[in-house]
Image 1 (tube, rainbow, N blue to C red):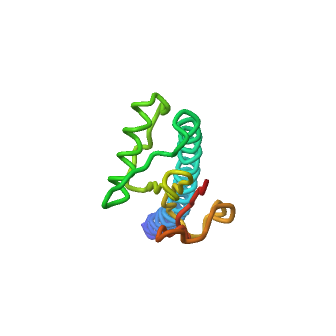
Image 2: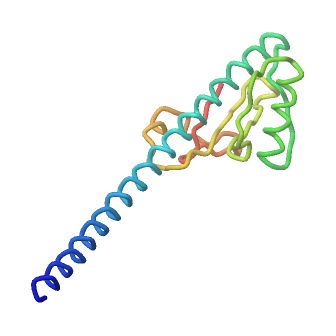
Image 3: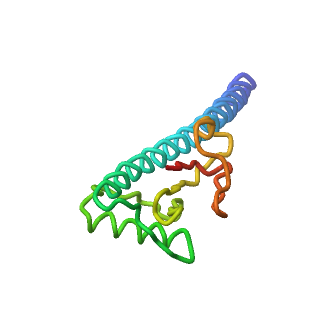
Length: 148
């Protein structure tokens, strides 16, 4: 009987070790998957900005000005920009999270600045963007900005 009790104890300890090790592995995978998701969202946001930049250049080619938009919030300005580009048939798809984007026309429509809020201030993508403030429009990190 004593032998049987020792085996049960060893099995319970073994089971606890397996469960705790599994928990640590799962926690590590969860943290890593969050990093991967954040990086993917950053790449998607930057790709969307480049798509909008192309649409804005086509708009300029047709109208000799960039869209001039007034709005009280970045969301209003962005949604107005989307509507203008859709009416001109210059936009095939739209980002699903519009609240992370902003557009500002500058110099009476001769320049523009567009930005997306990235999820991580430490993102390597923030090394290659416009990082200044122009006409009150802030492009410091964690915003990724394109100025044309």
